[in-house]
Length: 536
Ligand code: MSP
Image (cartoon, rainbow, N blue to C red; front, top):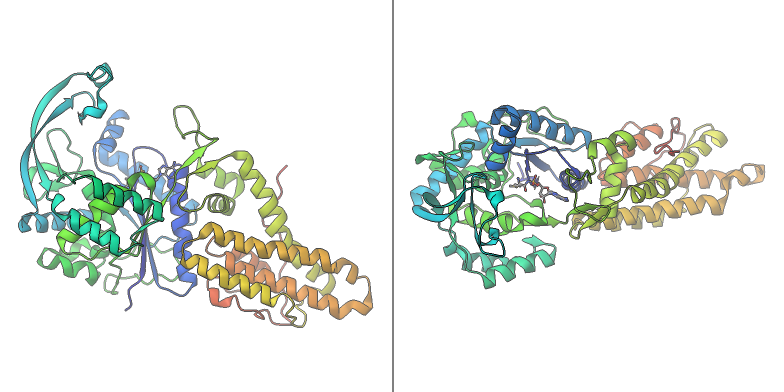
């Protein structure tokens, strides 16, 4: 079986509820995953939750729950978000699952046996209240630690370190030889600049269990748990390994976890998924794209490749870095109430309105700014008056003037439609999602203009213009059909509704169907219904 296009998101900390930033990342990843499926590639899309570590342990303590009970509740909310956003993920990994822990242990054991890990004392300033080591950056202007840190004392603590520094030269060479490894280019340049100017330290990969118990125990030293980032990054690899992917198991060799860590796919919602039983062979590794936010590039573009390289595991092809959202020009913050609740937006406006706005408003890379006014403006102009109006009046006119029966084929808009499809295909392959929507809306606007120019409502009044009216109506409904195909990766619900209103049974999830002439003359369409009801 061929290797699938394997795409992942960052796994979200469960120390708070899902917010716009989490939702945005998952939507853009879903659009890329659906686009690849639509292009005919087998795909595996993974997302999940990051559940260990101090932040989560403290969040659980704050509400008086055990860490596990707290994680179970929050993970359910993140899982509910994947459903609300209509994500086509093939699996959802929680780092507290046995299948993940088994692979983390295997990787740690391998690195330990190879001599990549060592134990050494660490001396530092420790805040007992915040349960964390402080650095010079935490000192106030007068050189002392602020009283908010509570009692701060110098502490010597033994920990386990990963020999990361020795791989710096190798990583620099790798980044120079693989310009696509970190994208966009300005993020790649930041990492190159960092690696050229700073000598990497070895990475502390343990926390003494005495002060942090919520983590994966080190298999070779039970007094310690694994540092949460080492644990978390491994999720991308642990799922393929747990599913029995030879591309993940072979590099682990004798360290590969036993079969009981594996399990079949979770209940399937996704299109084209084949992982139905543990026996089915899955080929995923190496990952094709890790989609992440700009704050965690160093973990993904420095620590992660070095971890894999040291363990003898092939590297992923790309780390794709998106920007951060603000709301009304300010950082989102729960304490000030300056937040966007993705679930509320989906409830009030529909999932595709949310998906459309975030992808159309923000290219993958720069930072973005959510405003409610901007959201409403795009909803009204581009969804309701643009796409919605086009499809609705095209179908309504075919019903009114031709009893809903598709007339003889006419190719007046064929060239423009096919050009749109081929431009969009190139953009989807290059992860240019915002540009892809602009391309599609070029066609939406052109078709709306075609209605105004050809004025079918006038043609309908003149019996001598009957064949001209047939031609116009064919062009409009066929363009609507192809729009559904083009829209599928972005707005799957809307795409399916358009297809259904056209009286077609198939799901518009294959770009090969964006070929002119698919609607057969004589076919009877269904009843049009508004796709994006006007508000107010
Ligand atoms: N748990 C780590 C990631 C481990 S990946 C092996 C983490 N979690 S997080 O919940 O803090 O963030 C998850 C993702 O959401 C990150 O990619 C982060 O950049 C993204 N975002 C968090 N806030 C965001 C915005 N305001 N805007 C856009 N994305 C943001 O980091």
